[in-house]
Length: 116
Image (tube, rainbow, N blue to C red; front, top):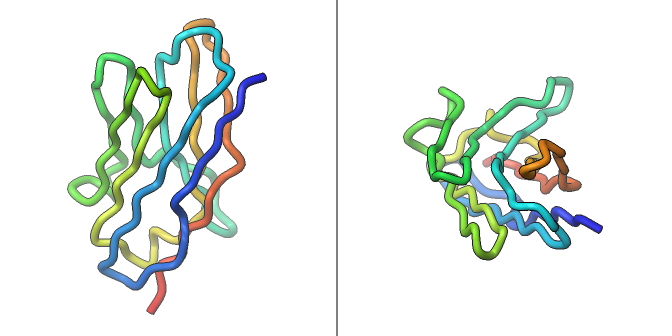
């Protein structure tokens, strides 16, 4: 059974940093896409950053130059380094992975709170 587990969320002051980690286990087929999404209270879930197997990345405009996504394909792990955090980054952050059969899996989410 495929499991997607996020970790690293927490509370931080504005301007601070956090690193989120997502590890996938039980995946039989290769992972072709890994992404971080977030959902703030009362808002729709939105893409934060993604990375495909070749290493090409994509970022939401709101996090460019502040967040960095990286992956370790051998370990089925994706990281999100978040710097210069702002109050508007407060949300639950979810990891999504897609395998070579185009099936997607989501984690349970990890909360991030940015507040003074």
